[in-house]
Length: 346
Image (cartoon, rainbow, N blue to C red; front, side, top):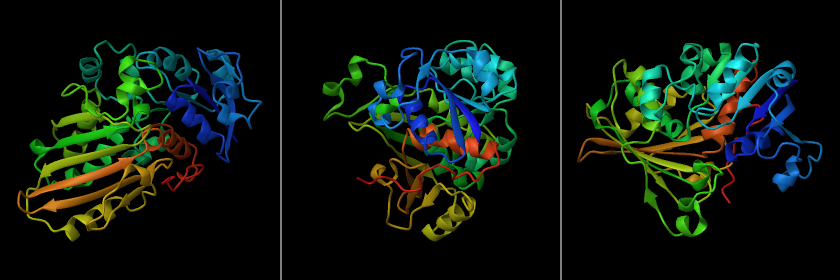
């Protein structure tokens, strides 16, 4: 069994990770750390865990966690992870970080978009970007994985085959993405109150969202040159799910069948990516509760643009589920182990 600990277990991303871990056949949960609820039973905070009355929350003890864990998931605010992870890393424990602290290759890019200096830039050279569909072999050997953001997961997976095959104008990419309210985390702020979100929809952090740089990093690697794009996120009045619509100009005239065959080949052997046939497009209810990314597209012959639509559950493929997928690869398991293949729909 893999001895697992989670630091930051009671945020939305952390608790979804814990929920999935309880069903994993190869996992034994060792420690669940919560600064706010240390000493309490998990079921007292989240009653859906009532069947697991023996699971309690504890305070952070790096020595004890490193000593008893094969792998540690850190689900902490940006900046906090980079204070704790070096202490775990030097003790030889494997780590998957769900914050943005170890997703970047360049500390300068991180500092530009996050607004403060990275405290341990030397570990960026050791960290692997945890998108299994693109970096599977590196993840298998990694000791530190930076789990991707939710918006980047949905956008990168949809655009990657086109960019890798040099089929689109790299200066034409526009990403319009919409997320449920859990994407903002569990902290209470006025703009996330029920009366603010319900029956409403809004764009936010226009031209300044941090995930822009993360998407650009990965697409630039695929392109072999710098990619600059426009990304606008929106908040939807739903709990979970991301729907991303992407636009790009084609460099040549292509048929739907040409592009469909290319996507099927690119994601051959990727169990969590599904490509839709012509005329069909994904919706969030098709993927919520699963680790799936569904991708559909259309070619607008009038403008010679391709329009892509991708859907993921921001808490599963966009966070905890993808983290478990990475763990499975790191420990030589089938990457689907312990992960739901089918969305809830209802």
